Length: 177
Image (cartoon, rainbow, N blue to C red; front, side, top):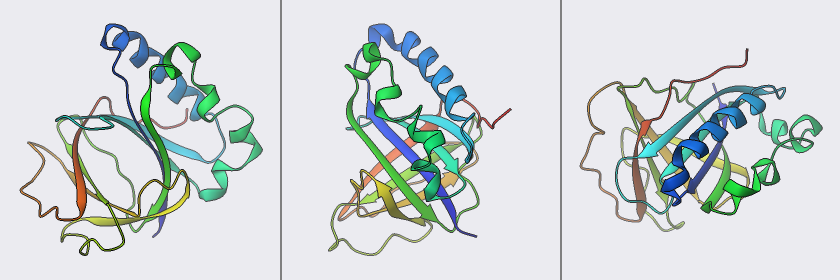
């Protein structure tokens, strides 16, 4: 079963307004989940220093969800309030597909993303599900994902030619009402 995921990653260095940003993003997810084709949403925070320590993963019906008028008429980069958008950096949006049913992570769980840095990188390490880039910013060549139910993210990981980030969820997976 091939699933499609819209992955948004960014850095939000304005820690003084973090609660306001989290509140805004909660409401933003609520809006996105009203769009036909959005099936679920979950936010994560990296547990170590990273270029883009915040991640939101939306499962969508198919790639066409992101080009449908129902999405383009009320979502996208300009749908983020300017007071937050102006502070967000390292903001990338990638549409990926893979043979993974969902990427739901419990509050005690973890998620590891591994990104191929070039076409010359070695094969995806064992234990990761491959996610092929199929649209939007296409800032990565390939992405791998591994999910755990509890404890700390597994390691060590042979990362030659790959960038690795380890995440914990900020909230449970949300679904349309």
